[in-house]
Length: 165
Image 1 (tube, rainbow, N blue to C red):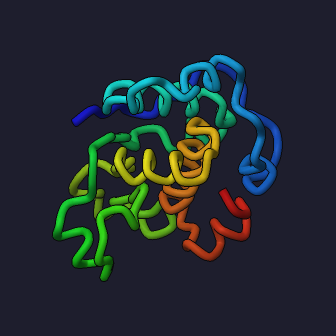
Image 2: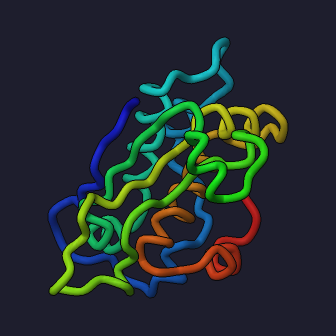
């Protein structure tokens, strides 16, 4: 299982409100080149590289505030997660945020475990193959959606902010 931590670059905060920061902007050409249709589906490590490159396109203000969120790439969600969410197929979940949203945190009760964003490789690749969508854009959409939960946004609020993938 591949993972990495979000880290903001040093420097000033990005301008703009959160909603403006979640606009769907094209990822840089480098990311698109990484996500072009290869002969073989990207491995967990290759998808982690795409995710890390995509995260670099997210405004610094959001990366800094998401700071210590750990991003993990694995093939599928485990059975416990699928059962808890009432999902019948592991292909129904492309990403998941697990942690304590910033809006629910308390200085008297620190989070017992690090906040996590899981990217599920096989459902992402399945969506990518079925739709012909740009893989980097799909990964970006899922990452922003899950990071939004870290900030306390609901699924409905994230869908409103982001629109369709």
